[in-house]
Image (cartoon, rainbow over all chains, first blue to last red; front, side, top):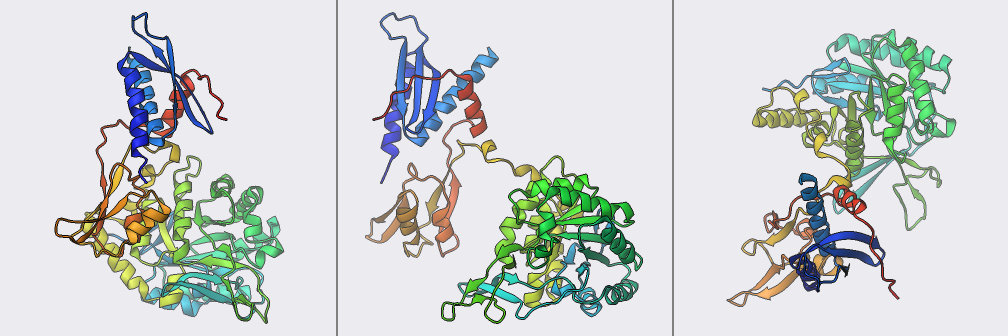
Length: 78
Length: 428
């Protein structure tokens, strides 16, 4: 019983938002998994300011956390 | 030839293998036989007011043909008067001046009792004292042994009383029958202990006879809990040694014991912070001569590693032991089945399919032969397949380069804590 596809689908959703200029703004975790809020950082007025994903797969939860850690480290360097 | 000599808190012995305080060190005859066989030291069977024992006293737990995987006993401390033991300690020390003799002590928790026994025992020339705060059975019902050892205040106070008069190093032997052994180890340090030793035996009932319904062991049909030791307890003991070794406030040497059966376990304990080891069950199972293999094996190991002294092993793996929260969540290993070695027993497939993550497929190769293959993308690297595999080399756990930077749970939680919270949809 492969769950890899589930991870791939969630990772693609995360990557899609990142590629469109969003960064991770907030995270809330509970019994249902992780709710991740993305905030648009670009200048396109047609983009919504915020997007939210409900992430279920453990590897996807590792994935967005790794990105969040990297985001914060980059901010510290700047 | 490496230097095997040991110095634990000033107690010197020609090698790191000591017999633990237990039936093998009951008398001068036995300890002298042990020294002749090559043991470096002996912790004399606990001295105190002589007790009365019952029969039977021992029980062993076997597993899959392995005899004495675990060992249970309900024997108490010495049943011989103090004067007899002291005379034999004196004679043994005189005959073996370079071997370590440590007297294990247990008395009621009063200052007067501790002062008396420490003074009397040191008069005959012991190299050190080991305060027995660990014996879990019998003596604990009388307020001694583990009953004292489970209360940090009593550990500290009694250690202090012993130290008030002791002229030789004081080792405090700790019970594992406690949630966190570092609390009592700290109490021993606070009381002035020169070293700690661990673990004493674990509360146990070896079994129940399913025909007679009697406990194993039993005394005329009635049983009581005993103390468990032997190879089965090694992982528990090793963790407790490691937890104490890495604790910043437990800064005294540790004498390690619990399932040491060969030089290999001795190396493991020393790498994890033990300054030497104590042995009991293996000697009871195989006799004193096992120390020859222990010394040879340890010496060969040190030579192969290019290490001059056994003391150089102490604590070398401690920095590699940490809290779960400091482990890298992004590190990934996967199973790799070597089909040229695999015998197609399918144990790995069954284990993975039934009890792990369902990532080993049963397939046919180009020639129609049965093969097993891991779907690496689904493998969580749990090790189960390699653990149950009966053939060496058939399954390797290999690093999987996923390109992700290291990230610990603690780092992750700090990052999430630094981010803002997110609106949550209620799941109905």
